[in-house]
Length: 446
Image (tube, rainbow, N blue to C red; front, side, top):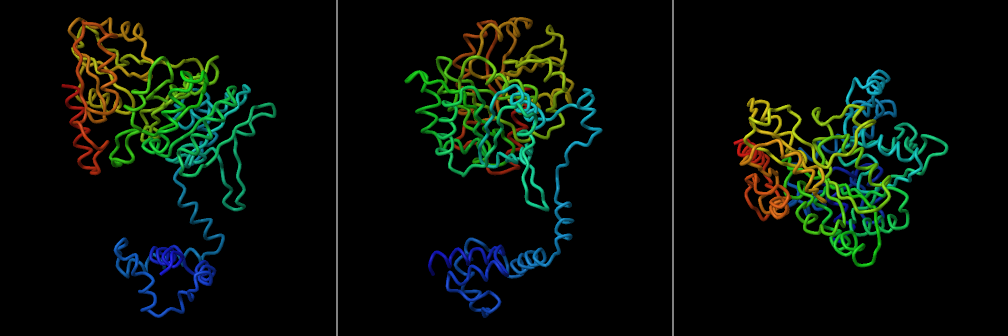
């Protein structure tokens, strides 16, 4: 069987190619139409993929039935079916009014959109590319809208004002080195704009490691070339397995020195809004690496009121916000990113008023004076515990272990709570993930 026939047999086995599509493909492969094949001939086509696809004949028949059912629908019936598939609706007029008046908080995607909107209307060019960037890997961005009837596309951020700067967003191939290399070049050529590369999952950035080592982290030191490129790397331990959990935060922090770049792991939409704006509005350029969220995109806890965007600013470290009496605090948890919400939820459920939680939103550069001033309210001997979702040999712990003693002095005892050390970033078992996550939270609260 030649390669074309093998590909056709795979498509046939998966029920993705039928009717007219098969009729058009068959002549090129010298194959008869599916309907004209005998049962034995059909089995011969499917058999090369049997080891990879073990569904029963009944299951395959059902897949073909679904495909043919869609084919037989009228345009009106298809439109009605699409309506049933919609998972996310745009804000209605009442919801938008409540958001403007500060009655309804903003989620992550809305804050991101507002950051881009304010930048382009102020004259800053914004360019975003990546795998599924127009929609967003987790269907949160909706930067490009598609008319389901006509197929026309519309990019709202490109038509805000006649005098605005250019906004462009591109879906790129799954070729991290090529695309990141191109966007890095764009960032050098357009220092007066915000250039962003987004990985489908942060784990996939390892496909561009040569570009990261040779250019992003060291070009300023080697060649005095400044880049303001920003990387969005979805990161977080949520039971999705070893290939979809870690943006390898530890690697980025190992590359950090001489203020060569910024590494951040945020917890609120307002922080994301201010960080994106800061990246282009301030008068110098450094690469920005963001461990961007996944589940927090729709978490009802990870929201920000409008006034935090309009009047606030980026906080490199967020102090405890529970209003605890510092004299009662016996343990301070220092963490970054999504795990904060797990810790805060457990603390509230257990009614613990002796555990404070601080968030390191910007992991590099760390500012000594800022951390010292926030810890000054707690008594000598208080435990400072770095808490992370990642295994002990990954994440930010090695980096923090090397830098925190100098930053916090000898007043506090430093320790770490994490997953056990591991060769793999995460377990492939959802049940094991949940057990590990609960253990991290339990150990952190003590």
